[in-house]
Image 1: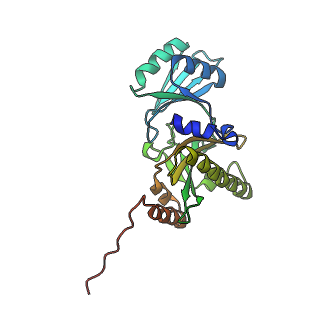
Image 2: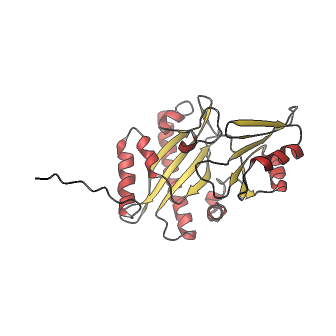
Image 3: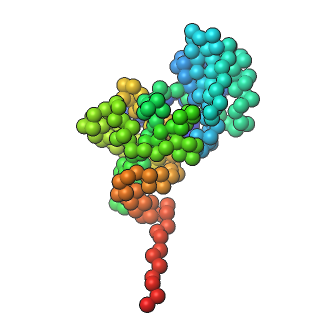
Amino acid sequence: KLAKTNALLANPELKKLVPATRPFSKQTVKEMLGQFGLVYVKPVNGTFGQGVIRVEYRKNLANPYRFQTGIRKYRFPDFETMYTHLLKVRSKKAYLVQQGIEMLKYRKRLFDLRLMVQKNPSGKWESTGLIGRLAHPRKIVTNYHNGGTPMSPEVLFSPHMTPSDFAAFRKKLDTLGLTIAAAMEKRFPGVKELGVDLAVDARRKPWILEVNTKPDPYIFRKLKNPSVYRKIYRYCVAYGRIRPKRRLRRAG
């Protein structure tokens, strides 16, 4: 994850959209909590949102330190007690600490976006699909494999934007996807597809949470519009990610 983050940071335009990310240590957790008030502690090589811990510092509360993993929530009176418990809860894997983004919500549930960016059969990058992921009511992660619900982004943004505002915002995201692809290709030659996880804050600023070089194309089957998945599938077949399904011939 840090190698991909560094690829994004090398681009001045993208650097502004990448949450601060540092290797996990007691010092970085303390410093970043003091700076941002909210951080996510993530496994370096995690998948499906497993092992992600949301850590908060709320200054004026009796138990100002708190964290959540899965559906379990913990509160602590001081940093030392919280950090000791954090070490017990996390796995033995390598972790990183990422600046927390206060994401937009839909019906009091967090949501983020997955933007699919692929090389088309002509070898040019194209933003091919956008899907929303609504978190489980009691969880902090939006991943489908961790209780999240794939949804139309138009629906999720309906309390926050008019349809015309969303259409303009969507174009902005598609362009952003192409910029990300160009930056990633410089560091990872040969990459042909990207799944970009985006959070959007109250100011409508998109933040790049993560870039996946082997994204799951099948989540896009959950969209009502089947043409989105058809295009993604067609491109996956063209560059060899998916083998085309053989149609069985009927015996004459």
